[in-house]
Image: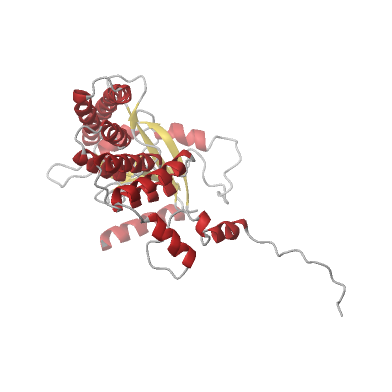
Length: 362
C-alpha cells in the first residue's frame, strides 16, 4: 500500500554547488584535464582534442579560446591558448596568434608580467609582431615603466609606421612621461623645500637652546613648531606647549605659543578671574597669580618661570653656563613641557623634592 504522499520537492541546492557540478560534465568543462582519468566520456574528448597534427591541435585550442574571449571569460580563454602553445605548433603564425591572444587575456586580467613574457616569446617567433609590441607597451605603461614603453613603440613604428594603435599608445606614453617627470620634479622641489625649512628650524632651535628629541618610532605630533604665517623673516617661532598639572595627572596643550608672549597671558586665559575652577581642581587652588611654573632642562636643571617671562626668555635662561656641557629645553615630539603647581603649597614643595631626588639618583 502507498502512504498517499505525493511527489516531493527536491532539496534546495546552493547555486555555487550547482555550477560546480557542471565541471564534472564533459560538455560544460572549461578545459580538459591534463591527467589520466577513468571517465570514459572525458577520455573520449581528450582523444578528440589531441587528434591531428600539432598545428591542427593548436588551431583547435585557439578557436575554443577565441569563443571564450568573445564572451569575456578571459581566464578560461587563457587556458585554451596555453594548451595550444603546449601542443607545439610548427606553423609560426599559429604560435604567434596563440601567444598574442594569451597576452590579450593577461592584459584584461592585469597580469602584466605574464603579458611581457607572452609578447617576448611572440617577438622571438616573429621580430615584426606588431600586436606583441602593442600589448607590451600597454603592460609597460600600466607598470609605469614609461621609457621602456616608449622604446617598445619606437621599435614597432620603425617597421609598421602607420599602425594607429601603436601610435596612439606612443603618444599617450609620451604624455605619461611628461606627467611623470613633472610629478618627480614637484616631489624633488617639495623635498628640497622641506629640507631647507628643516634646516632653518634646526638653526632656530640651536639659537634658542632648544634640544629636539623626536620619537624613536619616527612618528610626529599633529602640532609642530612653525613660523608665524606673515613672518617672512622667520624671526618669531611658534611652539606647541604642554602645561602639566602633576598633582592631578592632567594637562593642557597650547598649540600655538608665540615665543614673544609672556606665560601669564596664557594663565589668564586658562584660569580667568571669577570663573569656576576646572573640574579637576578639587580645592580651587589653580588661580592666576597664585601659581608657579617650572621648566626642566635637558641636564635636569629646574628653572622657575617668572610671571612676566616670555617663552624666549625661558629658552635663553636654559642655556648652559660657560664651560659646562650643552643644555637647553627639550622639544619632545614637537612640544615643550612645563609644570604648573599652586605656589607656596605642600604640593609644590613635595614635587620639587621628588624631582631633585630623582635627578640626583640618576
